[in-house]
Amino acid sequence: MKPFLASLWAIAWLVSPHLGLSATAPESSSLRHAAAKLFAIGVGINDHISQRTNDWPLLTAQFSTVTPENCMKPAALQPTEGAFDFATADAFVDFATRQNLKLVGHCLVWAKDDRTPAWFYRVGQQPASRELLLTRMRQHIATVAGRWRGRIAMWDVVNEALDDGTNYLRPSGWEQACGEEFIAKAFEYAHAADPAALLVYNDYNTELPAKRAKMIRLVRSLRAKHIPLHAIGLQGHYELDQVPLAELEATLVAMRELGVKVVVSELDIDVIPRAKWWAEGGKYRAELRQLNPYRDGCPPEILQRQAEQYAQLFQLFRKHAGVIARVSFWNLHDGQSWLNEFPWQRVNHPLLFDRAGQPKPAFAAVIHALTDAPP
Ligand code: XIL
Image 1 (cartoon, protein in one colour):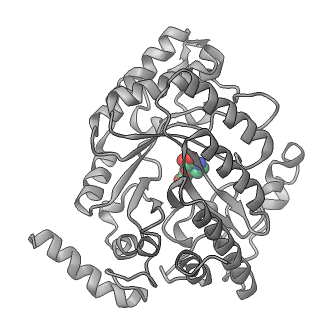
Image 2 (tube, rainbow, N blue to C red):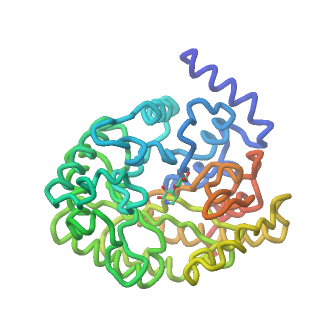
Image 3 (cartoon, rainbow, N blue to C red):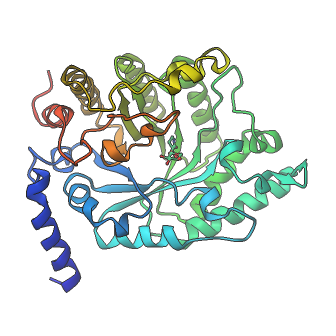
């Protein structure tokens, strides 16, 4: 064993008893082992994982695939035109490669104006022309996907382009200049830059009938043009007691019928309902900002409901494993969840591991759903 690997192994061995999990865990204590015959198990993690040695044992015992949480987004890699900053993302890719973790690149285009540096789609205060926007996009994708060519297993090529309201596509600088064509071009450019990568269109709420219909339309349209779209990413940011199981199944079946794979790309189950944040023009926001019911811990009955709902989800994923290539959680444990900040600050408990990295009731429920005979 190389000295570096030997020391990693030694750290994992030393720390694992404290986590209650073994670094070489069998089926009963490791998600990735329990799911091995079904799909890959991944996780979106902190950009600076290469320095966060405390996170390594839990990460490598449980997950086979990693997505960097922020450092490969357009705003992180190219905040101003031509000024690429690869330092954090390079360290992330090197870490994952050393640890034998597969990589998901996230994301080449984020089709939301507030998530995209405005220089992409503007010239001064004016909108950029279609040609200029596509040239900038091609340069970004060729540089980014080309840099790690052959090292990224899957790319989220376009993120969140479908509209939540009555439009087909979300209004944005991209959509305004190019219509649906910017999506098709992004996939062509990504495929040219890294022909071996599995290319994903990623979005949220595509379980819900109206948005599902838009996704079906998009897949059909790209397929008709022979665009290299390989999989659909269902983000899977659910809320306790609102997990849309029947609708999710309808989406999985629809994708199977269309012949695209599915990845569940960012799974979590929020225990503090958040839908009201967006209701009625945001009029509940001041009230919600005060809501922090589980700051001293999550009550056992809530953890139990969460466990049951995670189990139902994984039973469904197992039933449809033929179409699902990967299930990734969004963040390593409750203390690192983005839902502690979004859309307001609160102490949240949406994942399978608590703040100490200890398995919660939902962990055993998921292992059971993955390994026992389906009901
Ligand atoms: C989130 C990150 O987790 C946060 O740290 C960041 O502040 C905002 O973005 N859908 C996505 C992810 O595709 O990129 C988002 O990640 C979560 C929602």
